[in-house]
Image (cartoon, rainbow, N blue to C red; front, top):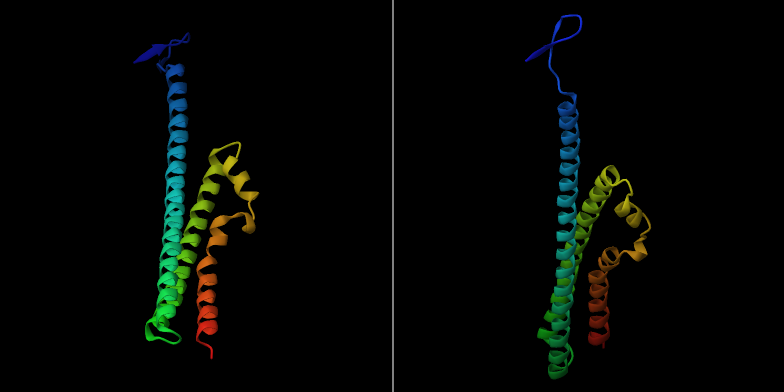
Length: 167
C-alpha cells in the first residue's frame, strides 16, 4: 500500500501509531520476560533454602536420636561398650558428612542469592532485594551460621567420647 505525498512521489504508507505500539509491546514483552527470569531465579533460591533447612532439621532430629540411644546404651552397658563406641563414631561421622552437605548447599544458596541480586539490580529500579541483602552480614545470615552446627556437633561427639571413655 502506498500513498502519494504533495510532490507526487509514492511512499509506503506507515501508520506511526502502529509502529510505536509495536515498539512499546516489544519493550513490555522484554520487561515481562526479564521479570519471569527473575521469578525463576528466585524460585531456585527459595527451593535451595527450603532444602537446606529441611535437611538441617532432619540432621538435628537424627543426631538427637543417636544421642538418646547412646546415653541409654552407655547407661545400661557401662563404660566402653562396643555399641556405645559405634554409636559415638556414627554420630561423629554423620555430623562431618552432614557438615559437608550443609556447606555445599549454603554455597549453592549463595550463588542463587547473588544471581537474584544481579537480576534485581537490572530489573527493579528500587533494588529492593539487593538493598536488603547488602545490609545483611554473616552474623545476621542464619544460613551461614547454621553451616557450622554439624561441625560443632562433631566436636561435641569427640568431647563426649573423651569424657565418657577416659579412665
